[in-house]
Length: 460
Ligand code: HAM
Image (cartoon, rainbow, N blue to C red; front, side):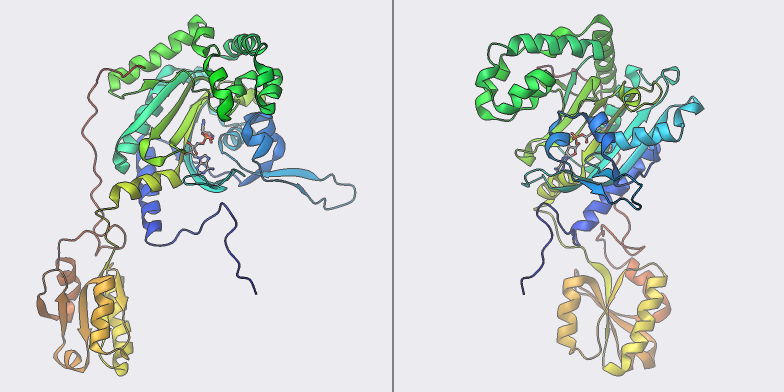
């Protein structure tokens, strides 16, 4: 019988890698809390219309990559409903904002989310069909200040802080403005005019998009089309005064906050809802799929989905890509995580007494592994050395004396420790820090990098 495997483009995440995922999520939650964001959890599938209207029919995501199916009707009179596994979460968050009348409070809604997204892309390093995003959205009525460039700068400053706290080194922030809806209409016109004489030489997708949504021509990856795309007008030339002033205010606030960025005129992002500020943080170590995260403003999305006017800005980080980047950085220094102690029963008749001892230590918050009394002492030592920093030997002799034999693998010392003092002794037994676990493994101190120093921006 053929063995079953995880579906192409999906993966199992196993320990110890999952410890890194948990650390990333804990750091993100901690940063979001300091910036006063609350968590939102929306369904993993939605009505297909949400993405068609929100993300845009002509985008790669909607036209090629969605997992969509017709849900069975429950009764003959009922219509089938087209459902889609979410390819991204901004549309779902804005749908929830509208559905629950979150704008009625008059306050800005600051919402974050973590979870799986689904796109039927060609799998490669850093690109999967099920992947995880950590994202956040700031949305609200204009009276709450939702259009203010300060919100854009604060989100970007938060992202720089989060990447620094995660320990991601060497990121680059690419920044652009795609203007208001009116600017984009003007730009689309300029693109149509520029494309007219050359579009016949381009790929079929571009030929269609030149008609329906010329901005999406800029997403084309076909190598032969790139020289033509290079000659197309830039969106910066279509921005009106208000959009230019908005962008200038964002960059001035970033300069003041000391967040370095580079202006990238080609950054229009592959989703239709963006207006004004768009951004991506990239990392050189990721190869072709180098975007750690992307985001931008979407001042018209709520109205596109039938809601009230509710400008917003947000981002989503590719958690899989954060993991890849950190793994590559930590490759040399990574040692598999170890628990504080391996409890080794000597003789099978000592198994239950050792189970009780392991339970005592675990109740006191220590992470321990339990051996088996059928093992020879040599085998216990070998297993212990692989999984733990200390071995605790508990046989008949120790039961009689009330003292346990503890050996520390790092410094080789062997001690006889009274049972009542064992937990404290183990806690102080070495200076190794453990990335995950109970009190035995003090949490790696949260490194808060020094305050960012205002610096000169890097312009292209
Ligand atoms: P996006 O650029 O489509 O934006 O995705 C954001 C991030 O998700 C990417 O930068 C990348 O790190 C990760 N990502 C995307 N596709 C994959 C994949 N197939 N495999 C692994 N990682 C992937 C959005 O999704 C917008 N909703 C972001 C946003 C929020 N804009 C405003 N608010």
